[in-house]
Image (tube, rainbow, N blue to C red; front, side, top):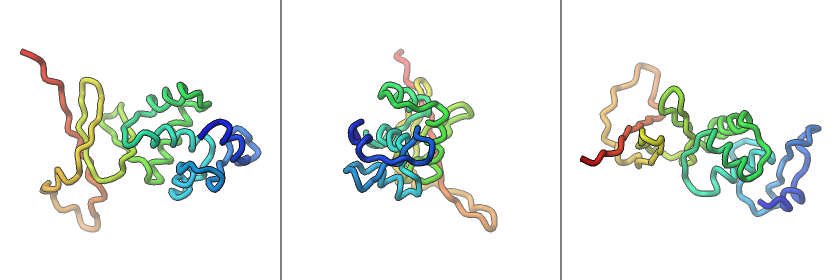
Length: 162
């Protein structure tokens, strides 16, 4: 959405004019409607971050990477806002959080059942279709519990030439 569209099709979200709600009926952009469908208010910052996240197809990002992209796009958001928004999107079910170790968390725009290759050398993630690992022989969960989701991260290293 262009800056002109934002000015034309927004209204204040509250007394705090720093964040506004974008009216989805007033623009052709699907991001406000997607946020509303997920139960989130389509604030200016959420819509702008959603455009960065979902505008280029399925991808894996860290909060720091998305913050860099937002800064490059001249969006006025803090790193804390990016973290909060990513966690809100995850809680709403439009993002998937992938914790690969204690220090690195990725956010995946593909929320379908699938797994990941992690290239340890550079931290790059690649999707593995969920059906590829359908034959896993899982133990039966304890009484009263069921498997909610299975996250498999296969760690890879680049081969060195001999």
